[in-house]
Length: 187
View (tube, rainbow, N blue to C red):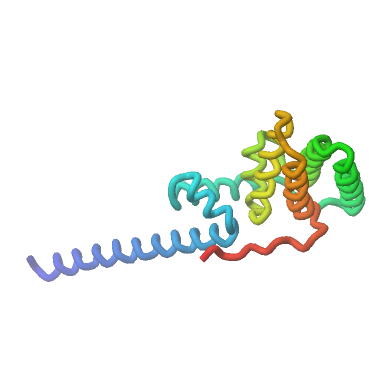
């Protein structure tokens, strides 16, 4: 083999190695971004979708979907109105816990809609919320599970109290009345 052929082969190998290194760095950076962005939701997605690659595709798709929404903060009047409605739901819990949980579920949906989230099925709403509120989306899932049990007439009062606590965590994060929960890298 002459020197030109050897140089060409070495150059091709170097270019391929460089391309693989760049691709690997981009993937690591994307993975790091998604772990930071989604916090505990990243781990849940890895478990749900069977591995990091599938989970990262799903999480990136969620980000892209939510970027297309017109998510905006609530006006001060809206915040006040929703806060008042929340207080009424909490007061109602004393006399009618099942109805209070139903109220809380509906109120969370109203706040989401007022902020600009589309009202589709529950799983899609939870996925959408996970982009900007990954620290509280598990509260939403837990509350929803209890609300479903409540509709079936099988929830105990303590379960309903827990549902209200879970809904409150998401409600406050959506309403932006409490400091937003900070995302911490899962690394």
